[in-house]
Image 1 (cartoon, helix red, strand yellow):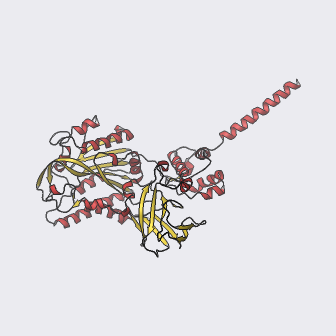
Image 2 (cartoon, one colour; image 1 turned 60 degrees about the vertical axis):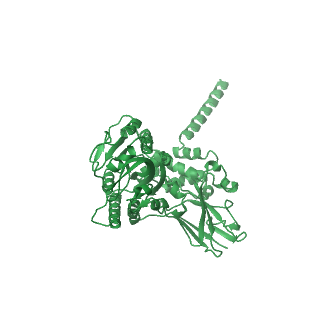
Length: 490
């Protein structure tokens, strides 16, 4: 009996220990489990921080995570208290992160508006790049959002919903003078009215896509320039009015397609074109976060006929995350300040040359072509940008020096910007701002007199006035520019 009692006691103790261990395991908070999951490589990086923020926001309706979200943003104070406990104070202090995570909001509805006025007929005459690009755009949107949430409309002086069963056959069936394309008042199409109508139908939860040749129609009582300036003011007014409802962002793609048909110039005179390349434009419009979600799931630059793009927003993310690189792109001898990572000391040029590089996070900007444009930046006089380069996946082929890569590989930086002074006595205070200035392609695509369109096939009448009107609306509301500030001590 003593043996049996001893055996029973041992079993009871073991069961009790198992229950306690199970309870401890089960009682671990889901937020802690997620942090440990992200730390499986025994390190918690800025990329892990971003992933944690995204995970919380995607699960904000779950009772285990809703307390970490306030007004659709992360309660960083509450989350940081848990991170400090799990990482330890010293490891937490080493983190210098500013998460760019935002709720992964998906548009409820996608409304596509295809201008079908007479000036657009040439794009659907025969098999064209225009039809191929739109088919790709719609197929991808249908796959992501569901056919039931996608609507195709024709637009001229009114909106006419289109009926379709198969996307590819629908776009191949488009032809001047035939249904389904030949509907509505095709003789009337005023660009600002198109934008006004489309934006009036765009709710905070929707994406609207407008396809147009974006040619202004002018009042004959004014001179050409006066008329374009007047239209520019109307465009500004249309976008300002919509911005009162929610933070509207816009992404424009310049596309190119074969055109066979009538071109109407500013005097409404007709020039016949036969399979000539002509630009047209795709405008993707919506509330900032759902527009970014749309662009994260699509890459419009891969569509047939893509040429250029530009992104309009009031929020360029003023808290730009960056880090000085100690080996990459460095020319000259320097000391990097150990207490503050934005200071370079004891600069000694090599053969009169000094150069340095910073890693930057531009993942929030969907228009990567503009990010790579040197003209999109403003630098302190006495300096110039040498290059802006995207960081290859896993740094292969190697762009970043292995010493730097060992430190930043998990920090989520997207680009390397290399800078050099242009004068020997350069200032010690250095600033670089991403100002998203209008790229050169906008000016080069513009023409103020389209009477000789055959010798200006790549131009769009009044296009720069359209873009300036929209940009001035955003500037009026105020734009927060991302900035890098460094101290360079000789």
